Image (tube, rainbow, N blue to C red; front, top):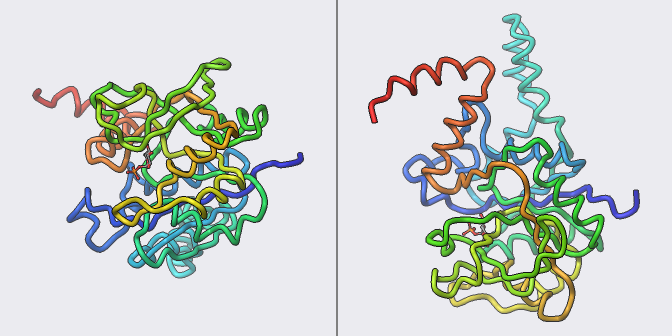
Length: 290
Ligand code: G1P
């Protein structure tokens, strides 16, 4: 099919300061939800949505991510020799999920700058973007839901979720008009507004389809005072130029794994859903005094 989106950019260069000291010597994206690192959930979501090429924008101290998506010959041999064939396959299959590319963001200049580091690998085509923090549990992968909306409008698409008003200042927030079931034509997008300034409680979740005009805007916009280039500013500039940007309130449960409580909730819920661990964890939770 023409214009089918085959590539995803996943920026993973951030320091993960919110999880210190756990992230002193390992990337926050490698923190586990039960038995898989957060980053693997994102790659699996992408692959289940039809993505074949994953571009990580990494930084210093992120080697573990490269190793996780590579073969681990010695480990696989060790497991096979002990008859643990299924586990060996589980380990091996990770490297075959997609084609992986790694580019470095040399200095922490924000997610907009991270995306520009991958620009030369994209060309003039739409691309998916997943942020390392947002894991969504859903029947249809969240990214696939966005792709379905993209098929209709062919412009940038943003995943949206309603949050309690008091939480809006953690996220990008949009204003817009509902144009179809769960779909909004966005008229304004602001990064981490105060509760009083927030145009709505529809928050931006870190899953996007971006078009070449967003990358053009990223090259044009100025960094914020903290020297960071915001994707939100580029999207706002695309909107201001009169090009459409749409948002979609996806179906599914979102876990903000960039936050300690969000990650804990993900661990509990995925643990409860786990075929081998679920009943034991349920039993344990019933005994917890609250
Ligand atoms: C980023 C985006 C923000 C979005 C959020 C979703 O913020 O800038 O608009 O709502 O991801 O997770 P960050 O979490 O990097 O501060």
